[in-house]
Amino acid sequence: MKKLGMQVEQIEDVQSIVIKTPKGNWVFDAGTDVTAMTMQGQTTYQIAGTPHFEEAAPDIPAEDVTMVAAQANVSAEKAKEALVATKGDIAEAIMKLAQG
Image (spheres, helix red, strand yellow):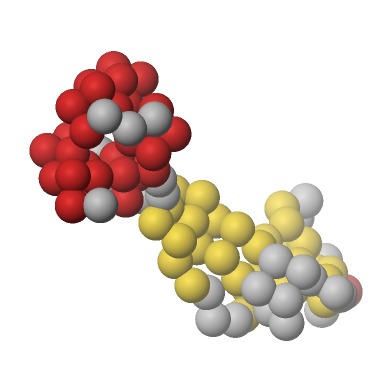
């Protein structure tokens, strides 16, 4: 491969790889095989492993937190936790907090 101008290198001791997307993250944990291939000045990485998907936490506006906290008579912290759990659904967060 060196005659073709290609260099291949196995990357050792990979602890994790995270691919971030707007909907969440693909996470490859330790034990994932990563190979770097360089040809004509361009490096390509090959990942071999089984990822798991972590859904992105919704962006919760401060006004929503304040409204849920006031309506459910709870702290802002508890209101935000409920909004994150309900993916930003205000009515569902209030009902969840009211149920205890």
